[in-house]
Image: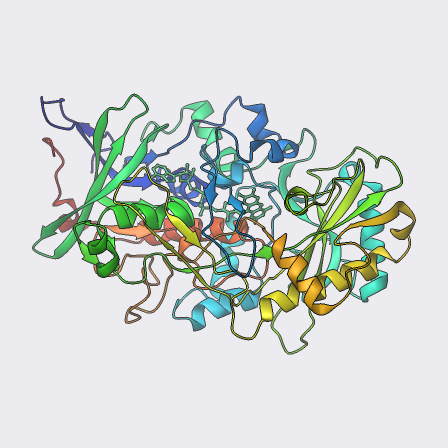
Length: 542
Ligand SMILES: Cc1cc2nc3c(=O)[nH]c(=O)nc-3n(C[C@H](O)[C@H](O)[C@H](O)COP(=O)(O)OP(=O)(O)OC[C@H]3O[C@@H](n4cnc5c(N)ncnc54)[C@H](O)[C@@H]3O)c2cc1C
């Protein structure tokens, strides 16, 4: 196979074609890993179609502590949710439009998924994705995963950890990735460079070294370029994805042809969105919108998962010290149900008053304060992503169906979280810093009132996943098989947060990076098969 992408001229009325061995849609968290790994073989050509710009020389992106300033800005796709009768309908889901994807604007909290998380995937039909099989991929990660540096450990966060340990009886943990845990309080591991607070995002760790040295001429980054349709053709072997129609920033159209495979890494919102606009999804939904059905795949967009959280805010006795890695670098895991496989309640401790949602219902932001955000590691509610228009420019609908699980487990978890948070706040040495509970406020004590508050100010930990879930080859609602191949289509795989069958108890980014590493390995195992090159490598396409 040629190491040089083949290009054709731009014929009038036609779209120029460039052919690569692999076309990766999305240079985000998983996409950066896969592109970098595939391009290690100089005989292969690899293209990355990335909707956003490069992150190189952008301090507002590369400086971890500036993450909050990116949300809702020009590098954010900013997806709304649908009306949430049981929760907060005003949540905006940030999704990064920049090389590195969400690893370029998240908080880079780095947890290896717990053994129970992977084993649950294997039990859901993802054969080969159990904890023992997945463990080695963590050691391959190139990100600089380190504990929060001593100088970034804020005094009030240290006191939160001590108070959490005393109030709940959980052990203090130094290095959450050293061994599986059920409970614990401590500073997190982060993917960052403490000496200058620079991100160790997927792009920084996997792509920058090659972009800066130019040692991967076989890797083409098509930046500010939007993939709007996956092309599927009928071949003697069946339906095959042959490439992606893309639109550049200047409005020009191109076809990126894949001689071997297309890999979709556009994330849990944009991968199903692209499939649906390509006519791949539930037949009835597509027909109702007038989209030609290319491949009936009922699971696309189903199984929308997230980690919902609530918030409790205290005013502090004056300003707190300035130092921090990113203002939310310590936390707590609790296991209320001893029969569970892992933690069932998690808290981030914010060194800022996080009142965005409470302000909407009348609370005021204190001049100085801190917050605890209890979240649900294993939520039971399941949502759905779907299109409301055949126009690809219209954002998809994200209906998380927050707090709709039949037995009320999700809402109850947040109520338990607020009660535990209050116990910690009443315990020294944290108690001495706090002058008053701002929200929900000490007068709100009953289960129902607490639940109503917790749900009305609920937020997301920004972890949407599961919308193209992996499952056994005979699982009708699975979108990809355990080799990440889209069911019923040749030449296309998915590797990003959308393939998660269930939600890990911990923050998901490391899991996504490990999906990327495993996908690269699966692709490398494919033998050279002449039939795989039976796709257009020359000419033009409409
Ligand atoms: C604010 C925030 C904080 C978070 N904090 C943490 C944390 O601390 N720890 C943690 O573990 N997780 C965290 N997460 C979650 C984590 O970052 C994500 O789960 C993970 O990065 C998702 O990776 P992905 O590869 O699925 O998608 P992404 O990283 O989002 O990559 C998708 C890429 O595809 C591109 N793209 C999309 N559609 C197209 C298209 N049609 N054409 C071309 N390009 C396209 C996008 O521009 C993007 O670069 C956070 C997320 C957010 C938003």
